[in-house]
Image (cartoon, rainbow, N blue to C red; front, side):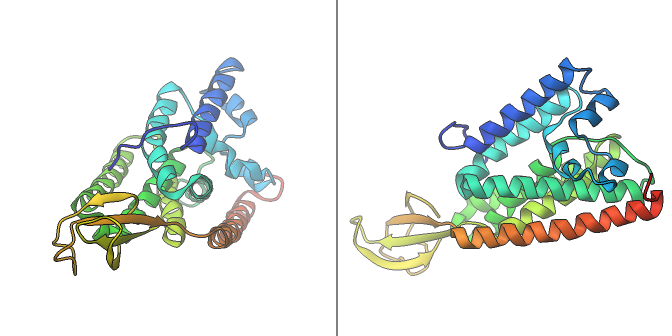
Length: 280
């Protein structure tokens, strides 16, 4: 269930994100280093005071920046595996929206945590919040379709949960890992997916394909199934299809997400301004 394959035609957004992330890392290295604080700030890294003073792009730009080669590779690996998988399931537009929304919410959580929990102004960057977002979107997809995806789907859902828990525990034991950004991304991707995740439907046929005898909710493409499916005592063939959310639903969900993110960003900015003052 994790075997996503990358393709320029079938997963163009995943390919584009990988290329952009790598290109910006090369740009950082060529202009002073990806671990140089001033250089990171020039490229748009996360920094609360600058964000509060109107540099709104710092809500999204950090998603495309990475601090060091290992940081880039770790997030690229997660994007390669889960990004290609989720993009194929949700479609490129919906995947791109989920990725960006999760990334922004992860950064907003991180900005808030820097101020209210850690009481510090940390320069940060990374796609991990967005990657957690697509992991959350995949988890919601599996959860909503757990009955129709069968044993493999439930095993994949368990694996997603284990990956999330392990990463959060790892984040608590190792310094420099932004667990709040991960949490924000996970919630952002999961909540977005709850509104637009594909619905699996299956047409159960008799022994000859094309003779539809019953319709039940279930997955995509064609698959051989066992007679144990409810109401399919004589059925051995099933034509399985995916119903994705329509463009209107996707557009409304994106618009609602943008409103929520804007409100949260304003709350974070106000919290910073109350703490540091209007001139820093």
